[in-house]
Amino acid sequence: MDWIKKRAAVFDKDFPLWVITALALAMVGLNGFDALVTYFGVRCGHIQEANPIMNFLLDIGGWAFLSVKLLGVTGLVFLVWQQTYRHRYLYGLYGLILAASVYCLIFLLHCDWLLQL
Image (cartoon, rainbow, N blue to C red; front, top):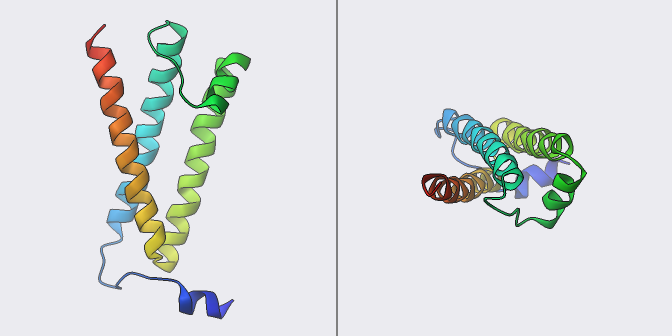
């Protein structure tokens, strides 16, 4: 497994590791906001879930949707955070930045429809 570490793109040792933790925490917080607002928005008929898998889980029940959304995404974020933090993988950092950016856009979309209520 040593060859994987040699070929993996890593970031500089001087990079502040708190940035990775802040991105991971932002992801978990934005995901929680997205889950709650989506659940209540769909139940009240204000919005529709665009993800067919999450829409299926919403049809099963709120507990299924919230469990998968909160526990699943938090678990994945933790795994990426752990590997990125421990091994300083550059692609993990890029992934956290991309995912946090997407969740920021989703946050803005939710804020837009919440302001229209």
